[in-house]
Amino acid sequence: MAARPKRCLVRRGGGRRQHGLAASCLRELRQKASGVLAIDKAAEPITIVLAEDGTIVDDEDYFRCLPPNTKFVALAKDEKWGGRSPGSGTTWLSDVDEVDGAAEKWKQLARQLKDDLSNIILMSEEDLQVLIDVPHSDLAEELAQSQTKIQALQNTLQQVLDRREEERQSKQLLELYLEALKNEGSILSKVAESETVPGKEMDVVDTGTSSTGTSAKTALSDHLLAVLKGKPAPELCLDSQDLELVVKEDTQALAAALSWDKQKAEALQQACDQELSKRLQQVQTLHSLRSTSKGKKTLPWGDWLSSKRKK
Image 1: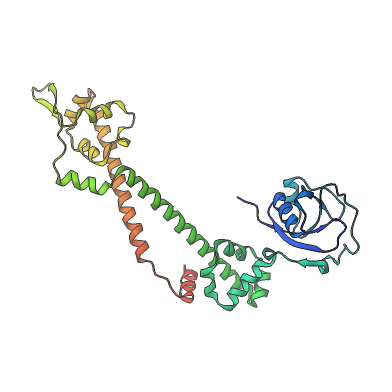
Image 2 (image 1 turned 90 degrees about the vertical axis):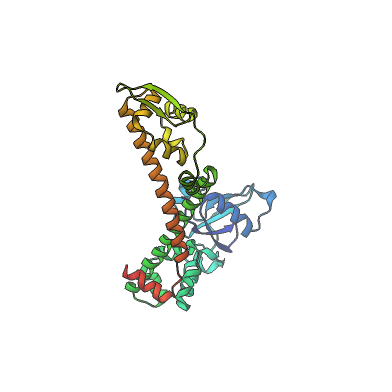
């Protein structure tokens, strides 16, 4: 997962004006610092140092360990750190000229909820996560609500986020399944064909005479028999129509045609039957997903929030 943005303050070497920005990695900090400090491309690459003691920050792990609101100095090529600037002690907040929008983003989102709770529907997943991560006490103070209500609100936000993730996964599953159907052809149409349309012309294989004196014959084609005999898991290689033919075939005739014993032929038929059932179940699941998608309704925010809390 990508690292969360960290609030930083950066200034030029020898300057006092600091700029607030958010960066998730050292590389992003360099890029944003170059832009906000108007450092010419010819003066790059810049070096990032700690404003407190001039420590060079060139390791990503070290950058991630630094606390939020750490003060940095961006040194252009050939520049050197010249020590602390005057007044860089505890009064640094008064020197901030710009504040990156991400630094106080959660307050802006909280104000949107304070104006109208239904704004939650319009928020992105990133916005929802920002509000979920805010400490209860801070969000309660911003919204002028009790921490108990804020806890319930954040639980609801998490449920909204989880629901969107479930919907995305369902959509991905549906897309994958439709792609599989496109490549293989519609399973439903093949099953219907096998029931209503006479099967393809099959070669009749005479397997000789059994021990009881009766002849065992199979209507399976030579190609299908070759697949059954040559593949380690033939049920995965056959389409639904062929699977159905194998399942309905006489076990004794199938065993004789494949030169197998009866138990092995029965195991093959069971495997084909299970695969056919699994595919049909997938079709039913697809229909269920479509029906669920069509039947969804958008509830007013108050009713939806109440129903979520009851769950």
